[in-house]
Length: 126
Image (cartoon, rainbow, N blue to C red; front, side, top):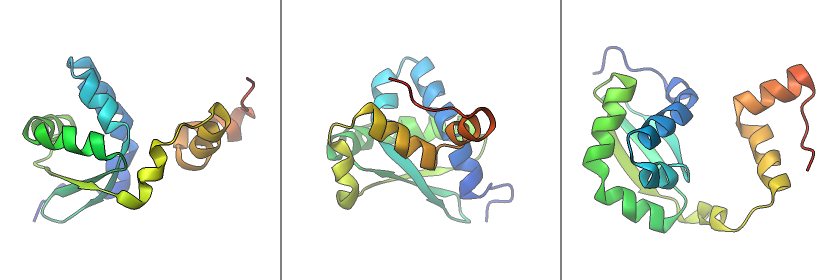
């Protein structure tokens, strides 16, 4: 059992910073593929499951799983084991989205966007 394993919400909260760290490490292609993925769960043994909604991204990330696992463990400073899964049902996310659709999704799922809307009355002007 992992003594200092944070809950999945803590891992999700830093997910975008992890993506940025991957991009800064000259792995911008991997970061782009990871941006179509979402952290889903983390077991007591540190198995960190990340779900990909694009089959192509999933296949590309599988080839780099060992390197990604090292980057993940280093970033979170935990002995996490990366488990990639493909979510065929969510594969619809590969469709082209408008700026308005993206903003609506972010306003529901992204805590930073929610904060900006709540505290500053932020809205999309395009």
